[in-house]
Image (cartoon, rainbow, N blue to C red; front, side, top):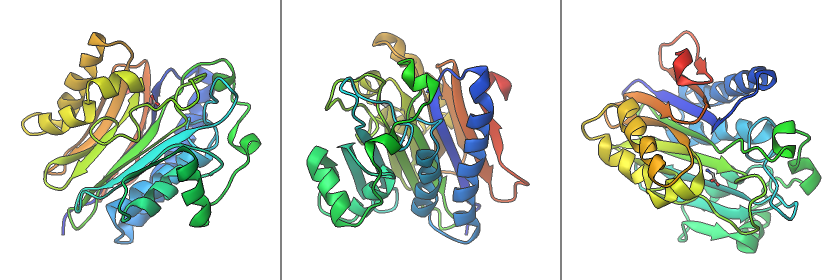
Length: 287
Ligand code: GLY
């Protein structure tokens, strides 16, 4: 048995002073949902899904309810989940009408396809009886999204007491994005990855830049030698080559947790077995 660990994020973004409390409260609720799973002996996969479901429910985060609308005013969401023990992946791309994309991704985890897109993803969600939300329920009056400001992807990584790792992401994409646009979040090796003994990572930020640099893949490689903090910092620093900013959370193969960002803020919470409570930050300088 090993000590379980969980680190989650609510996005690489700029947080206005009036949004700080909602970000902190949302992270506290989300990390508690994942913590409870791990305390009860549950799996890393169950923990990351539980935390991301909370972040998807809260309008302050750009995932599920609160997703940024496309240029056509629609909500198209992407999400993925990966099991580091089996390398199973489930992911949905530009899915509509569902409250919790991460749970649809989770339902795909043991199916033959790893990714479903568009109408096929939404049809799969209906077939498995996923909880449905109307467009009005998914859209919110959050001033950040109305102003066209990006307030990005959420994610979580966990190590459970059996030494299994998992990662999950969920996003509404970029504010005002083209219909059908896909960023890094559902793509393995770009927005996330998990492999037992190596590490698990979940990223947030400018999806085109993260995908062009295959940042999750690079972070996994760098975890063999660097601390998680340094592996992520070195990788997001590369985004200067292609534009955009980002951040990530990770746990390495030995159980070290870390995070880094080059965005103005990065809302992060972590908890480790034995801690009195979670630690919550809105940017690295505050640590
Ligand atoms: N990082 C989320 C996106 O670019 O879609």
